[in-house]
View 1: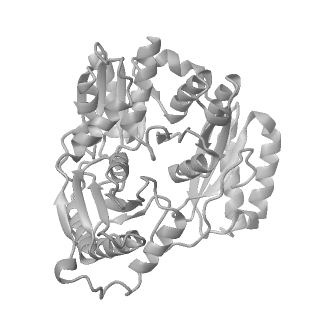
View 2 (view 1 turned 120 degrees about the vertical axis):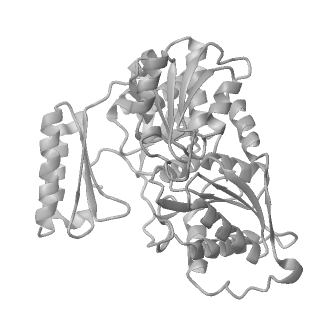
View 3 (view 1 turned 180 degrees about the vertical axis):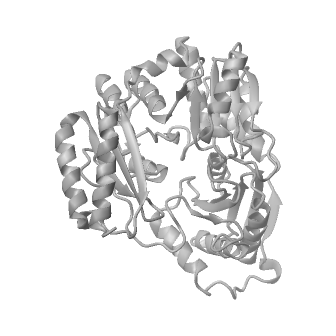
Length: 466
């Protein structure tokens, strides 16, 4: 990152062959996202989970979204766990945060989610939660990766009675529905509210409508007919226009759009206007400040969050701690600093008092709590954050070099930041997965910001000899 006023936590610089910032992802049934990889992960996760637990076999929770390839990877993953003497608890289609919650509440030794989140159905992924319901720290992920890439576990001694077994956790969905409903105050009800819920044909296609309906709302469901290939396709958080249309048609009070594994939330107000994660964080943060429930008067977000969020918090006497892009880094900063509320502009919202990871359904219930308690529509609540014009540009580069080794880009970034002073920001960073440069500028003149963003990209190209 170059010339940003934001103070950002630095991600791990350890090179990884398989794990990214959110598990392992790729095209399903192509390297590396193959059944063989899932089998190796099952063995490795079980081996790591067994340490210090000699008295019983490790128990591993497995949940997935609705992708066609989920069957293949689920079976292979379970086989690897059983081959290493572990016990598998199969949950079927279930949101990522539900798997994290069940792993913790059932005292399991690990949880694995088979999902590529908001990606198209052709992709899939594997991410691991520890027994505390949090994503694994870097050291444990690297150890699992090392074991997966070696032959160390392929000739294990788990034969005969030591072979593991798998069973289906038939009430997994019901357990999560009960948990989610408990985050909504018992003295309140959603009766009289019309809510559009788009589950993106993904993991929450059954539980999301159920949660809001059981709390009394009249629910109009969208994206609840998965066929293995339509997850995230023209629906959900990536395409909130369908919720916008349905909110207006039904004269609904709120529209809720989830992504494929339901850890992200985008909402639509009663007029059909989209409200993103930054505006929601402003609403949640200011209310927590009023109640003195925001530790150190600090909310955690990433470098991509709009300056309008920072201003809204400052007016209420709070402050914003920024991290590197990715909900993983938000959670790490929250745990390290003892903070309770954080999230991303994209809709990952973390309420540490309720969950260990982003949870779209729980976040929606916290918003509804405020709407019902204050008897105010979302359009009014969202006015407290005045968005600063923000421009995003990206470009594929011929090579990827540390930004400090690009002198023209660095000099221009510093000059532009000096021009913007306290009224704007310059952020330049590499994509986490490819040689793509991402540029973000904030300030008052959007047209000028766009020109400046393109100048930064041109400077990087010149530095790289393109």
